[in-house]
Image (cartoon, rainbow, N blue to C red):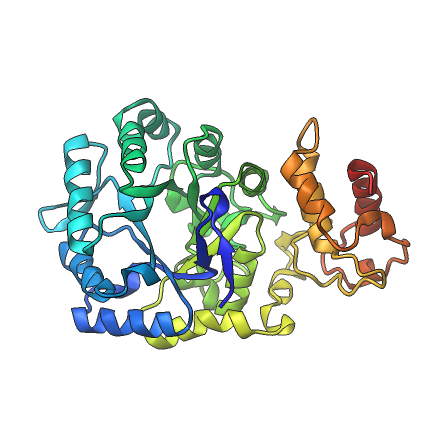
Length: 382
């Protein structure tokens, strides 16, 4: 298993995590067996957005005697009423639901206290200017949560939350399908068929800027909807008309700046194994570019997708990393110190480029790599 640092929290999380939807309608023993299986593969990170009392209790039973082996992401503002889940901004309900979460999980601390999803600017304003964020901050000060998170499907809302400086972790929907779609307060449009009928080119600028913003500010991203609700794994349902493998979807998400972990929704141990197979997959298995290129309605021409086809460089330059740090710096009046430090730690730099062009002959997306190397060398001075 690969472990990544979850932004400025310092927590080391498994690159493959577990979403909670795969554990619904299971017995306590089944959940415990699934956790044991996941742990045997090195998975240490899981999300619990659900307020279902039975599911929370089953998680608690699965954690009994091994709480220290897992990093829990639990959601604030997720309550249970009349036998069903309800997102709330009511403080009394929010406090009661969090107390219930601690009790049923059998723990004194939730590692990431995730403010349950906000997709509209008005809702985010209510959170950041009201009691919700004050409550989250107080929980962190009391040691009942270690980090504050927020989940969203809207890149503009997510960016505003990150810029507030109050959010340590962002849970965001990341996959090559959603990355084409512009910001919208109606999450349903992300997977609506009509959204994919018109020609679509390159990643939506707001989404690209969000990933780079999180990288610059040290906000870790954990990913939801990595398989697009399963649509990307089915050629008939995929907007691309081609199916991705689970490994390809996971590789795409984990290649985005700031992404630390993918919360895969797995209903069986075989699905957990298939997600974890990313860790041992070779370069060809991880390569998502064959699915994405050569389609009439979709093009990423000139846009680096960090897929790694440019390698190997005869001078040893890790071209994708140089390009990532270049993109992180481009939007700034001055190069952020953290970006410069990470760039300088690379074993080889853009100034070593001999402009042979071998990388460009292999790039599936027609990126001007030699131009990027010249720009990076001038920008970073090395």
